[in-house]
Length: 227
Length: 312
Image 1: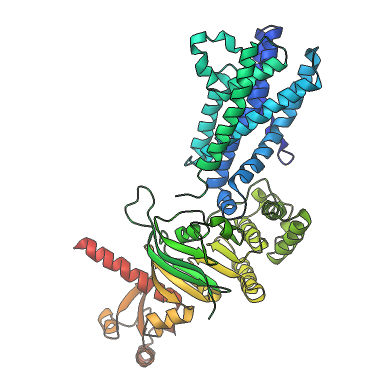
Image 2: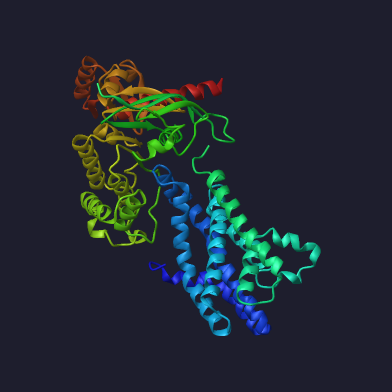
C-alpha cells in the first residue's frame, strides 16, 4: 500500500458509495447497517481481490512458479499476499471504526475486539476462496470478472448492508449459506443494532465453520502443483 | 565421473485436450556440478521437463529423482535446494530489483540482513546496482530479465533451473550472465539446468546438452561430441554463386540456407571446391560444422520425414 497509495480510493469506493447512499436515503439505523455492511464488504472484497492478483501473478508474472519451486508452502504464500491486500483495507477500517465510536454511545474495547475478530474470520474465508479460485482460473480477464461477480454474491445481494430479518423466513436459509451474512449479523450485533440472540449464536458458529471449510479447501484442493 | 543429480526415466506428459504428448518417454540424466542444456524447437518439451523437475507439474507417467529423492512423491525435500527462472516471467511492476531479491530470499527463510547482503552482491554482479531502487515497470525488458536471473542466483541453491534465461538480453548482458553461471559452477559447484534456442549459448555454456524434439531426447553429449559425432563431415561450405545446382550436388547433399547453398563435406572435398571456386572467382565460405548445423540437420530431418509421411 505504501508503494502504490493511489490505489486506495479504488479499494474503498464501492463500500463507501453504498454507505453514502444509505446515509442520504435512509435514517440513522440504515446508516449503522451501512457501517456494518461496509466493514464486511471492505474485508471480503480484499480477500477476493487476492484471487485476481494471484491469478495475475501466476499467469502474467509466473511468480507462483517461482514460489512453488521453493520451500514456501501454499498457505504461507496465500497469507503473505493476503496480508498485503489487508493493508489496503486498514485505513478504511480505521475510518469506519472511528465513525462507529463517534455515533455509538456504548462503544467499548469489546466492540472493537468483536468487530476485528469477525473481520479476521471474514478475511481468512474470502482469501481462501480467492486463492482457491486463482489456481484454477485460466486467464486474468476471467479472474477479474469472476471476482467482481463473487463480490456481488458475497457483499451486495445477501443481508450485508441490511438486516437478515427483512428476508422472508422461508428464504433465510439461502442467505445463511453465505459467510458474509454471518459476518454482517455479528457486526450489526456488535454495534447494537437489533439482533435475535439465537441468530447471533448461529452466526458465531457458522462464520468460523465457513472459515475452516474454505481454509481446508484452499489447503487441499487449490492447484499448487499442476497435474 | 560426476554423480547424477537428476535422473528422469520414461517421462510422459499429456496436457488436457492435447492428442500428442509434450514428453514422450523422455530419459535424461544431469550430472552434479555441470551446466546442462536442453535444446529444442518451441513446443519440444523443454519447459515441460523443467516444470516437472522443479516439482511444479506432475507427469502422466514415468519417474524423476532430484538429489536421489523422488521428486513426485517428496517434492518438499527437493524444493529447498532448487530455484527457477521461468520462461517469459515478468518482475512485479511495483517492486524494484533490490526488493525482488530481498523479498524472495526472506520468503525462503533468510533473515533481512542476510537477504540484503546477498541482494547487494548479486545486483552488482549482474550490473543492476545502479537500478536497484527503480520500479521494474520503468526498466527495459533486458534489465527486467536480469532481475529474474538475479533472484534465482541469489537463492544460492544446489540446482539452478533457467528457462530461456537470456531472451531479450543484449550481447553484453548475455555474456555477463554466462560469466556468472560459469563462475557459479566452477567456484561453488552449482548444477545449472537451462533451456535455450541460442546455439552459441549452448556451445559457450554447456558441459552436456540434449537436443529434444516432440518430447524425446534425440542426441546427448558434450557440445563437441554432438557436433563431431552426428555429422560425419566436419566442414561446412556455403556457396553464393558460381556453381550450378547439379555441380554442387555432385559434391554431396545440398541444403538451402537463405540465399546460400550449403554443403557438409570432408576436408578433401572442401579443398576441391575451394580450388574450383578460386578458378571461377566464385564466392564461397568455409568453416567448421557448428551446433546450429547439427540441430538443423537432426530436427530438420524429422520435419522432412513428417512432411513426407503426411504427403503419402
